[in-house]
Image (cartoon, rainbow, N blue to C red; front, side, top):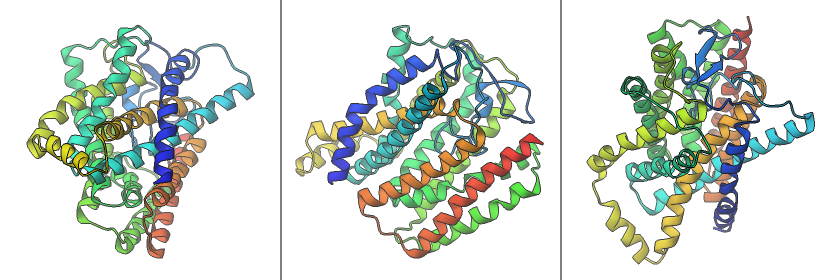
Length: 392
């Protein structure tokens, strides 16, 4: 409990840094305010200049690609910085990315342990982001996007997939251990390759496909040996994987080469998808769980484990941390090369698993540890192989 309380205290102090980092760096880092165009990932088979939405393929968010990061993924702007200053900024982004991600997983699991309403909690978390980016637009700190009905129609299927990514992950985290959910999430590259081949006819080099073997084997071993294994956790995590892969495929099919609205840079795109996903989630939440969350909230408070304030704060911090780690991930992405991002993303998953095991004292069998290690190492090999294939 001490670790959890310390995390909550730390997050309360550091979540405000997100607004500072995001607002300042949009004029001095990887993003161009008001631009919807970005350079593609190095060696990509796609068009040479695509809207940012064409690269929506993340394992835990839009910012994280299974193919690795991209130092040159975004058009740079602003005056060049000193090596030391640039390095410190990059380290700061990665530190915040890891911190917010760990915080989200812990707060989310705590909330789900107290209130077994994953659809409602997922909706609250998604809606919390609106409280962050809407004031930025209204105050002029960030240019608000301008979208037509046709633009929203184009984005709607991608928003549906974005919704599936999040709600699948939340259900998985509630149905099983945080560590197990992230082990299964490591298998996303397998789904991505399958959908790309099926829907886009994309055939990758043999070395890339070979890296999928340790991922499949590792997840299989971890699943068989997982002490907290449930079919719901496995199925929900796979729903998140399929939704994430489908999001990337749909982005390529519907948005490549298109100009979508105005001021739709990477951060605004994520904000728009967040707002659309919130609208999608509200009726789904009511259909699956109705309004039973309200009496359950009161019952949890009446049980003495929480006060109205502490439980409300827990839910709010979960939502803030969720949006924050995705926002910071955009900033981190634009600062590193593909190999650095691949290693950083792999280490992030390891850190989350270790942090969740420590925070919740979740037991892991030897088989589960071995399986997860193999699967996570496989995702690193996959990222490196994909980056190597793009350079040819």
